[in-house]
Length: 268
Image (cartoon, rainbow, N blue to C red; front, side):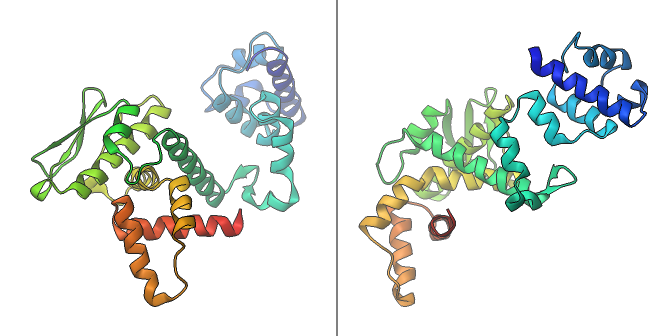
């Protein structure tokens, strides 16, 4: 946050603090900066070091987080207006996104992450996992173990070979490793895989991204246009199995992906 944006934010923090008769020492409690730094921020001599610090000070002085986002330039004016729109105001609770809103945004983020990654993987069904791994800067190594792990600072993913080197299992493991790699890369972290914690948020997110890598929206939509699913419930399960076979994923994955995309068409 630099230039005039930082000056506007500093002035707004000062005005909110003085309006609430809050001292600078109290305003920076738990915020990771000194009161003298806050004084310089308020007077436009330095900018707020990070958005997290700005939010922390704002909470202490009673300045709305929406105002912080607008003044910091994190959201365009149109974005601030959209968040303030009465039609979606209930996603906010006391100026913060509700847990449901955060969960939905996170899911949308993961969906976009997978879609952007899959865009250049071609139109082949099934998706070439080795090619996908190469694009992600990852080497896939099946080996004789029941555990999966990353090596060489996250550039190599070693996963169970499975009985008789089962092809589908290796595809699922490979996509799972790629998903971990993509998610970790966004924060500059070294990817980790803990499949024993299968119910953890990290593992569930990786599995979700993996499913969208192996069954990309564009390829699934094209496939369903060419071979629409039958309306007859008796034939539906068989048709889903054919989708799973074409993409070489478990039927449960095919079912979940079809359901997700069909629901998306209804609402979006």
